[in-house]
Image 1: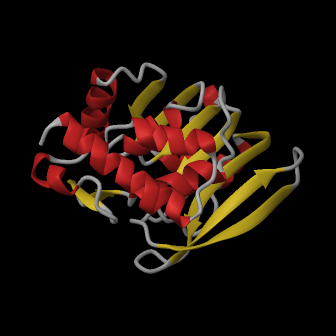
Image 2: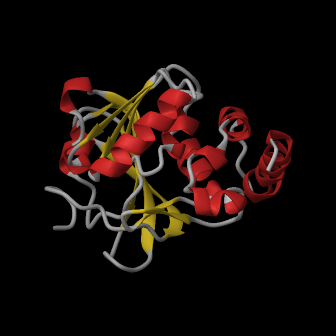
Length: 217
């Protein structure tokens, strides 16, 4: 398919799946318009890149539904220049969306082949404000903390304490919390002070399990 064909699909996706479902952040909407989702899916699913749903990317993982990527990015409250931690790089698509707004995105993926592939695609597309590494995302990236936003693209049994403690005061953590293989609650955790946190429920979602030291074993 030509670039024009993908651009038309991308515009339609933003109009109907993003704006049409209530996403209002101008930064997120513009980022969703800019990122070529077709570059982040596997060759066999390119024709479905802008469909309304997740797609397999190998290693038992998926690229999230476009609306969910937009919802989580909006929940972070990004407005430009922030330092963001992305847990569960996967294809790299969500990192690219956030990188269109944030100052820098640090992204952690536990599966080496996905981390390598995402890093390569992000570099090819010129996202030089994204750093990808392979590791246990439940422990965060302490040497780059504190973070203005932390986005977790996997379902946790509870909010990892390491991630809460790596939030800047005023920062937001967006994470699915709930059963390992069922529906989870998408939670926003805002750090009010060094010791106080506020939580908000954004609704039901379904993600792959968050594996690691402070996630599922």
